[in-house]
Image (tube, rainbow, N blue to C red; front, top):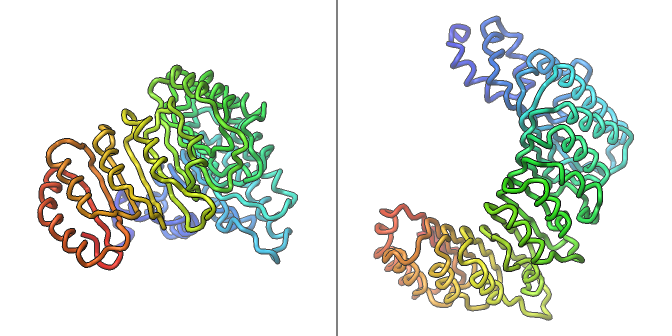
Amino acid sequence: MWDQLPELILTLIFDHLECRDRFNVDRTCQSWSRALAAPVLWRSITITIDRDLRGDLSPTKQLVAKYGQYIRKLEFAWSRPYILPRETRATWNIRAKEGIEFIGVIKDKTVQLNQLVLTNWFFGTNWNHRSKLLYAVGHFLRCQQKLNFLSLLNANLGVSDVLRLFRAVSWSCGGTLEQLDIRGAFKDWQAPHSNSRYLEYLGRLHTLTTFKLDYPALSDLALNSLATAAPKVLRDLHISVRDSDSRQHTIQDDAWLNLVTVCPQLTVSYTIVNISHYEDIAYLLLPSIPLARFHMYGGHVWDQSRSRNFRSTVGLLITYYTKTLTEVTLQLRNNREALDDLLVSMLERCKRLMKLQYDGIIRDVDTLREIFGLQVDNKTYFQTIHVKPRNLSLKNRVILDDINYRYSHKLMDRGVDFRIDDPAFNFY
């Protein structure tokens, strides 16, 4: 019965299998083998070096040698990036060697990728074949002519290793690469923002539209390189800022103004993690930045000797970015400042704000009644609002029930995704 299923049905089933299971499918019968040869099954594959490439007769390598010409998206990673202390270097040398052999297989098939993802590459020791494996990947990248997406998310490599891959991409794909993600690509203590080679390679990416990076990889010179490389093309710049980042350098407002002038459609996103104090955030919020998305996740621990001053941070958002803000996330745990009036002001003044998520103290629950009333009266235009108030009393829950009764149907009719989370009960 199974061998009589239409190939389309078999293809949909095989699409959920990993490469090792597909190898068994390939040897089951001729009808299954023919279905497995469908190019759509090989457009996107994930290879875990230490799990899928074991042994010289690895099923994955055999399948790729047979169907590798169809691959367009490849995710090449380790199943467990963090090496245990007692794990032998010899074992990881063998795995890296097998990774080199796999790169050779897809290179021999003249595979032309559209997307390449190298994520979670963490090396606890400087074992021998690491450099050889990265060299093989870099040499493979030099043969790519159609790559438009490259991700080194959380690769955690040294500057020289990342720049080796950068060099290959900039030379071969500088005219095709559209999306680049290097968040976590560099080790925490290595900031490449002023590296001449890094700036040179950025200047060769002429078709870059989306760029995701950490703040240590950004500088005035980096912004100038982007302005030179992709004028009128660059549209999205995602910047991640963490408490572990080195903030010894600051970016001037003139550099942002120059980039915005050259790239008029540019929008900027900030994701700020475990940084709470206003003086640590104010230097990021410059007037010329076309800030569209602001996500701030405050931690449980902060410097008790100074105020976090969230009011000034939110006030700065309202002052500078009323014409550009579209999304705001404020996860302000352990906050004791009253922000009710600023939340209402942000929704009223930021006419493009479509999404607000707030996790913090609301002093007066009637503030939510005011917010929903503004939306019903067409004075605000948000489509998503999630609020998680802290320390709700029994009286406040009665008010929330009344708000839910008055506005839930009206907001749903307008297609508004709204949620008021009560930590003690189910959300309203």
